[in-house]
Image (cartoon, rainbow, N blue to C red):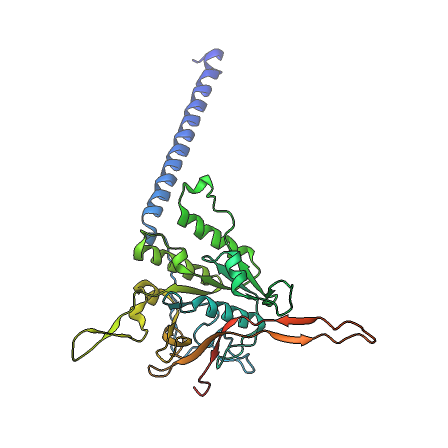
Length: 352
């Protein structure tokens, strides 16, 4: 028969409670270990736990209906450069790529269009000048004043056009001296902080590393494609390869005439990854004649045929003089106001 002390032994219940607590800790520890192993397995094999894909299948006839009264297609430079695309303008050194690129940016900012291209909607454009200094850009778009003693007259760009250039070459310590990575970071910040959605990057050669080769071009083109997928439109100015010359069939020697521009004159990653590629070259008609040729497009037909190209003349427009109306009873002649248009490309064959 149990005594009162044996019947109310508190130690027996304390030991049972400690045993339950130990079992709870072991259970929680095992659950935490299982969750950790499960998370590691999901990271290593995401295909076994992810059931959402990027593609959706539907009958071919179930296409979105075209709404009536929709707005016309928006263009930047005809089919050569459409909104949301990465287009590449390339040509050899000194052919006038930068002049043409600035003229494209100015036409979009003003909304007046170029030559035969549809008129774009006026938009804010950022011209990313990587190769030219501020002084070089100023001198290119300035001319001497016709009024003695006056300062040179600068071309007046539209307010919607802004120019971006590198200011501080110092690389932060966080980038460990990686210049290209810092440049990509800086350009992405420029895209995010600017009020513009349209960018002209002049030029790709200023972003490439001397030893990067085609891999560096692939990284930059992939970067531009990624940025364009966020709603930006980017025109990249690139330099062509060394030009090929025609071969004389009689002598077998190269002739002094270069072969027409083609996709063979641009690095292969550019031709593969750009939405549209067009080139500007020097014509054999004269040293001041340029032609623009559409070479490839992923979303539109080629704007110009193989034999028909758009021909331009590159020239500096003369200054336009206008006399300010004189005040009544003015004894001195009114001062002259001199304006200068920018160096531009003027179309020669509008019948195309």
